[in-house]
Image 1: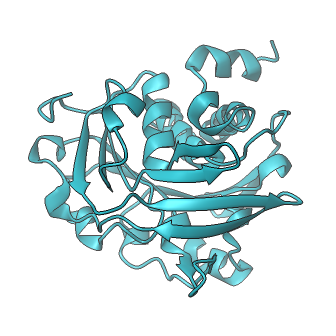
Image 2: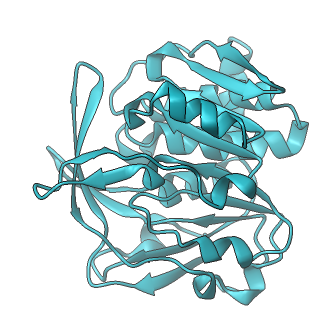
Length: 277
């Protein structure tokens, strides 16, 4: 689709190739989030970087995409043991900067930042007017060793925390309570997702627990990205962080029941599960 189309939400971050026991599966926050936003009735556009091995026109149909060419696509190997994730990063695409955001998209009212490997440069924050910005923190708090095994690093939030209205992170990110407390001092809404244990929401100076929706977990990859995207969509509708978090938790419960992006739900599916149907 043309970059001239005015999107509702600009999603920024790498798509990835996730290595599974059955082969490669499309992954990455930008993919899960944009597909979720589209399924919920808004028009997303994606700013990403990947190699020639990914045909985004087929995996993100009818979604405008601006690609910064790279020699390789960001690639992860995800394994799970007792519900805990172990990751290896095999390849990393290019850094995304303000200059990579098409001028036609810079008036978008909403922006979702979904980094995987610290690929979003702070200059991206200067590419837009005054949008509502939601972020997933996972990509800023990752580092990897010589064996490419991913671990958690300290991240103080940089300029990001001063330019967003809400942010999501998960138990898998391994963040310390001290770091969460420092984030809460600067971020109006924090969304701490805890898989089958539900989530908790920091808003108006306090934490509020949200139960999980029952789901038969097949593949937890992408659940946090679907949560972030669904939260943004519902938050812009209701302005209520707790209502939006419940909606997002319900959306994520569908995602984990299928492999890859196959489980992304539409609005009717979410509303039916919310009502207990």
